[in-house]
Length: 306
Image (cartoon, rainbow, N blue to C red):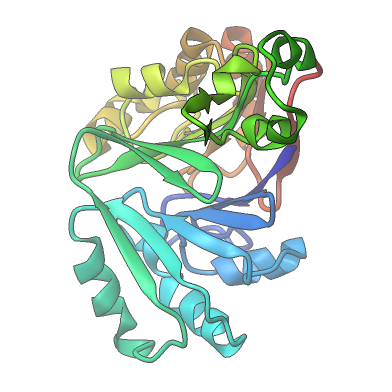
């Protein structure tokens, strides 16, 4: 199995915003299903430019309700509706999600598909949706804001030898391998009887609009890809970052190092940060496998070889 992570870019909106930078959105594609995190203005244009489709989007997660993270939703819903979508769409976000979305839907009142709402109210919640395990965790911004860890779990390897040793009939091997429990004539066969220990899956953590927090460190641990805001590259803007509840490149790099992630992508730049690559030597001095995010950046993540 593989997961595709497509990066639509993310940055903080201001009147002097740079052209050709899309607002916040991240898309993952796995097993025929697509998941979107945030939906800033221009998201559907960015998706089209990437050559991807709106139709497989089954889940949209929102970090918070500032305009640069949700203003593209009405247009996206209309586009999906005009494409004759009938499958339900699940929206996930902090408390108030249904109220906020219904307000935005004043310009998209009639859709041919159902919208389902999951509102996150606890400091941390875990959801199982469309093959993803989604962990939403509170971060530290000036409004309620969540980060997300997206995981594709991988069960243990099937062992024919163990199945034979326990005299499990051949016709039950396949359903047991798929995680089903079988009960026949008072005898119960469970997947753990034929599966080895869980193998390493795929893990992506995304967080933006926040100061560094223990919740980020804990949830990002051992991630294959860590996408983290870096509002400011300049060292002298640390007090500004603290005041506006954002992060510097240096702070993001330290989180990546301490969480022992495999790769770091920086995002959510201030519009005043025109050339983020100028600060990457400093970042890589802290965490070597770090890259500045850019529009359309994507990667294919695969399960490790056995």
